[in-house]
Amino acid sequence: MYQAQPYYQPNTYYQPNTYYQPNAYFRPYTSYEGEPLHSHYYSLTGFVPVQPFIQGEKSIGKHFDLDFKPADTGAEFLYLLQSNSKNLIRSQEDFQKFRTRSTYLSNLPNDVLEKFSKSLVFNNGGYASSYYGDIAKILTFEQFADLYARFGLSMKYFYDTAGYECVSCVGGGKQCKSNSNYSCASSCGSCN
Image: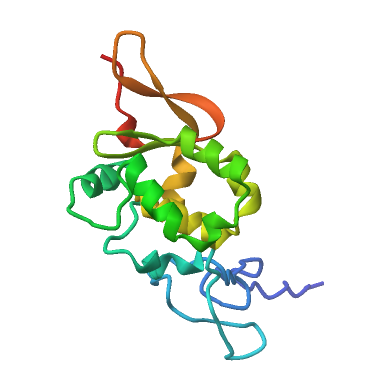
C-alpha cells in the first residue's frame, strides 16, 4: 500500500534575524550602531519620540560663566593651565578672592571652609589637590561642580582624580598618593 510522504518544507525551524526589527530589539538609552547620540528613538507603542537618557551634570554646557571650558582629561587640564584665562583659580590668593565673592562658600561653616582652604595644593601654575570630604556633604551638586570648574576640572575629570592626594616626595617633587576624599590633578607632577 502506498503512503504519501509528508510535504517537505525547507527552513521550517529557521528563526529569522530580528535584530533590525525595533519591537524585538529596543534599547532606548543607548545609541544604535552608526546613529548619533542625539537621535530620537521611538517607543514600542507608536511613534512617540523618546529622548536619550542624559547622565550627570546638566549645567556643564553653561561653563559657569567662565572664559574657558573645564578640562575632561589630564592632558586638557595641563593645556588649560598654560592658557591666559582670567577666571581660572591658580593660587591660594585667587581662591581667597573667589571665596569673598561666592555666595555658596560664604554659607559654609568656617571650620569646613578653613579645612578645605588649608588642604588646597597648587603646583605647576594651577590646582593640584584638595580635601573635598566635608564640602561634598554640604554643597549641592551644581555648587560643587561650579567650585571645581573654577579650578579647571569638569566633573568627569574630577571623578578621575578622586581618591588621590598630592603629597611631597622625599627626594623632591610631588606625586599623587591614594587617599580617600581627596582629589589629585595631573598638575601634581612626579617625584625627582
